Length: 182
Image 1 (cartoon, rainbow, N blue to C red):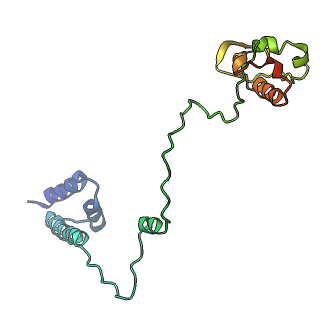
Image 2 (image 1 turned 45 degrees about the horizontal axis):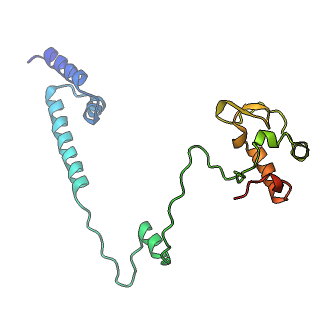
């Protein structure tokens, strides 16, 4: 093989190899002949074999001194420090509600008249604080009308503001005559 063919073969080999640690080795060493490439390849294969062997061998653990306690793992430490709890009686789960939890819902009272007629009674109407107009969406139902808010989006029976005020009037005894007997 002449020098020109060997130079072209070295060049083609260097260009055709995929980028990896061996190709970087070829770039750093600039081999001029095919024999130099073969020597570098053999050396690289031997080095990779040693590295793989070192990674796969298991490192023996040193035995601990007999006086030292072994450190606890995280899970063992948390479960070991817990005090045993007294078994609780079975409590059924609460019903899950869709959307956000409603904690501030007033109790519902059964009145002898409908709510829209109750808030129209002059003595009751003057004790209720009429809410100010708002652009806020007050409920999911676009067609439901609330006579108390004078707005759409929730029916009067679901009106929280009215429910809280009526509950306060019932507690004070003012609406005693309008409550249904249970």
